[in-house]
Length: 277
Image (cartoon, rainbow, N blue to C red; front, top):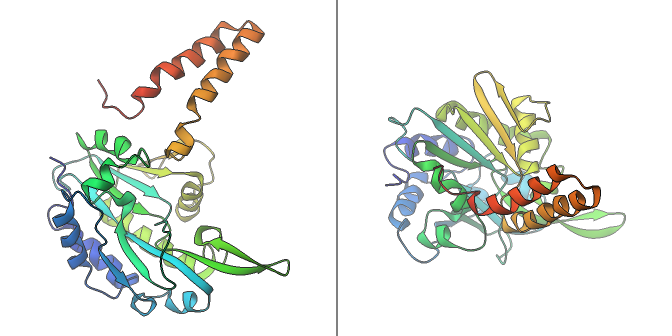
């Protein structure tokens, strides 16, 4: 039904990664993901060393106290050759925790290559993505191709930061490296619609694509872009608070429209990620 990483498209994705990022047999990892799709436990695809990376290994070797390194391979659902409507979803990075120093753990975007990853209560990503699969080809990737944590010296003190907050990574040569890969993915997929999830991913994608608009939705060179907030439970749990704010202010201001908006938000919250009727 989902056509997870079907056909031979993953071989072309592998080539992009092997040309610009990972000196390893990427096809083998994709086969592991396909084999793991109905598995009910988390499946680590593999582990890499810094020397396995192309164009960024020296940059990372210069970092102090590296830890929690992770790479999430791009994944897709649907028939690339048959689905005319192609959606590209761009997340930020492959967040990790509890890993050894300089050990790079491979996974998939949002951990959706296993049954456990899709059923987790940790976030709403699968609830958001699954309804899109009915009539679309859906491709998921990260804007920043590797996640890590490191130590920097700030105001004379050691401070731990994550890669997406490390300006030496999000600019200069590492930025160009990420830009090259994401551009190659866009050229391969040729999406009709690109959705960026979260402000950091949106800002990075806008920079790469030369977009200066602050609009939530726009069309550039025939491609529609939508920039949406994070859809993790950390964000969605605040929806009732926003709704109640409208209702309360509506009562205070005697503004019936505010009250209607708040009530409508409460009523529609449960339908955010369900299939269109």
